[in-house]
Length: 199
Image (cartoon, rainbow, N blue to C red; front, top):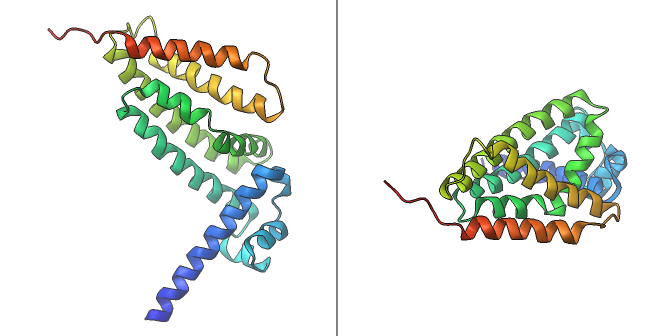
């Protein structure tokens, strides 16, 4: 029995090492660099083991995307209960560690339908959570949700943050300081606004 348990732990450990190696290579060199041989070498295993754990490279990419998605979604769900949901969304979406990897998956999705479908599913869940967080933030400060739709506000905050990361990745920084200052002023105004009186 003990050997079976150790064997399962070893299987999980190898699988996770392969996924982490894939994510590292994608971040450093792009998705095209994540070949089975490169992934195996980075994980410290024989290349045949890649296909033992993942029948195809698409299966490996999907597993990496799903693992990253779940971690990202868990952080985003915290935004709904945060004191300042919009500021939390801004902070999450300006984290270059995830946005860089996400950009690689977007590029890969142009060539792989299975990645595109998985990315769409993830993006829809993210949009739902971001909209809920924006709704909480705007409603708690008495903002007219018809005039300022939460989905639109959440997109402005999140997409602006992601755009900063994407542009920074290629060395483009013009306007970044001004945008960050503008968002900071907006977030400060939202945080300082009076909560509506209860009736």
